[in-house]
Image (cartoon, rainbow, N blue to C red):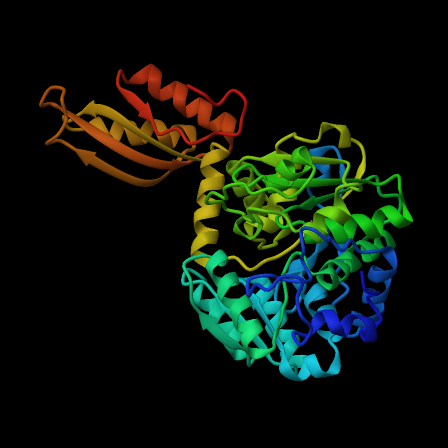
Length: 449
């Protein structure tokens, strides 16, 4: 592997003037499955020195959630970076490490979000041309932000895979360097600088819990942390809807898994990076997966307790704690990076509602009551006496199957907590014969009917 700080040695690999190992436009010489390039601690140290003037050293503060999780939790607030995510670290270092001729030609990447934003912003800062290929489903706000940073933005392809193919072809045709957002060695080294900051900011750490998608972040951070403090546990967390790192650990190499739709869209990488896996596989102590409902609840808890708006991918590590997937960390000092805050407002609203429903605080039910005067008033009085807030109510007569003197009422209501929901449920079932609750995937163990 080229030494990260040695631009003379790395220029032949970085520039497209050199002949790639395969005569294939879709081959990325920096991410060769047959020749992985694991990074070293020296690479991370070099990256930390080079990017310190251009990337924020984000705060790592004690969480208000420490009191009810029985852990001493510290949040590394990477959503405070200028473009809203940790991706700036690797992006800036990669751009700084380009040979002079490649800096003039520029770079290209395929990304729907944070990697594109980071590369475009720092490309503008360093006056290096950047082209990003974004899928048709990319949020319009992110597309516009990339254009505002002066980048050449191409919206093409139905998914990130098609974007990657197109970007690699353009890279070959135009002499651009393709930058893999989670597997380029310089990207890994840049992400690892977060690990150096964490161990400097928080003393006596017992564990670091990190969200895992393509594996770039956990590879860099695990290397930095383990090199300095081998006893610190490094634990990865994935969404159960795209557990590609878990599959790679079982197979002993990166393997393809189907990526399903997930709240943690930033982690939906169907195959972990070859360099990331080669670096991280020997350093990660444990990998766990979490349900979507816990990711939604983590987003909700962060808004309520920390006043922090965090995207699904950034909240996934906290989800493992709240879901009880890591009981061995009780009483321990734990650091969790909140990796990004670039969540669309519409998606945030859905996540908060889903979190409230999964927590038993937003309830929906259908109840058949008397259609005679006072029937619906009695229902609302029962709820008012319990302190339940009605958010929406609709009553239906025409399609009801019972007698004509009954009415079916659909109610959406807000309760204080799960116990309050159980109290409402018991009161309704005691008073009315026909009550049906719309049951979300409640996260409480006894939440099934």
